[in-house]
Amino acid sequence: MNIDPFLIWLESTALSQWIVGSESMFAFPGILALPAIGMGFAVGICLALDLRILGVAPGVRIAEMRRFVPIVWTAFWINAISGLLLLIGYPTKALTNPVFYLKLLLIGVGLWLFSRIGRRVFNDTAGDDRAQSPIVQRLAIVSLVCWVSAITAGRFLAYTYHRLTALG
Amino acid sequence: MLHDLQVWLVTNIIAHSPVANLMRTAWAWPIFESIHFLGLCMLIGCIGTFDLRLLGVAKRVPIAAMHRLIPWGILGFVINASSGMMFLLTEPDQYIYNPSFHFKFLFIAIAGLNAGTFYLSSYRQVFGANPSLDAPLRAKLIAAISLSAWVLVIICGRMLTFYRPAPCIGQQASILLQCAPAPEKRVSQ
Image (cartoon, rainbow over the protein chains, first blue to last red):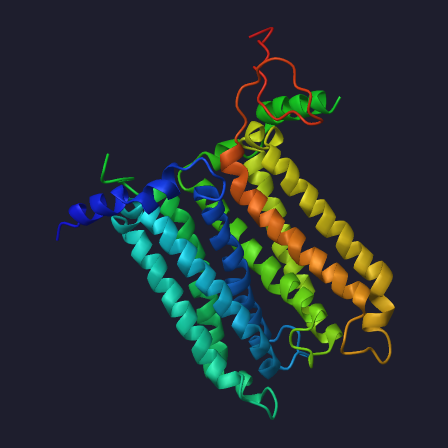
């Protein structure tokens, strides 16, 4: 399937050209800073929950960590929107690189694991017993591996693309 | 004087860097960047959540219990200081003369002093016998400064690319040199 006409159209839109070409620090540089902040909070809180499940900070009731869930999702949406804007800026760079799809897949799996773990441990009002189950412990380990891989895939995007733009 | 110190640092790092050869091998740079981003997540995920707890999120969790996450946040910081050093020791001029790096360093220093202030000023109130579940106002202020400082550190880190130093033209009046001076000619071979 040839997606070049689509890429060329997208790159010639005013929004794409503003994101890439504007001198304003709120254009490309500003948009680029957002996903790093969002990642810190979204992935960071997921990592903290995984660490907690694996035994760190035993005094923290795991069910109480559900209070941080809205922050994870807020950060996720900040990243989804800023990521979409970066994608509109450089669609060819991302969409022609298999690593980009790997990154999206890993983020999807990471978030799915986060909600699966959450469903098991956040309603456990009696105590932290359910978090001690081997299934949840294993999910936490897979979640850690998944986030480390997603971060690595994201960083490698900057080094593995073979086409920057379709417009040329 | 600071200008001379910057030039001295860059010159010496370039001449003696122990890691530049390693960092210039294939994939070393992106691997260390990935490690740097992982450290960032650990730092925000553990220190940031503690700050949020002080500000009132998850209020039923005792502050002292939440504080047990802090060593993992510090580990994140150590990972980032070390991986950051790998970049600095490979391309010193890209950082030492970069205004975005100067601000990043400033905000790291603010975050560090702020954390020190927390332990000096609020330790007894927060961790003593019969601690309140609601942090004192002073601790909340410190938590807000901590969160802001770390977010600013991330922003400055991301802005490094856009403030890469250009070659110097004429005299520099700023406190810190923000352009790359021409390298001095080598006297001997």
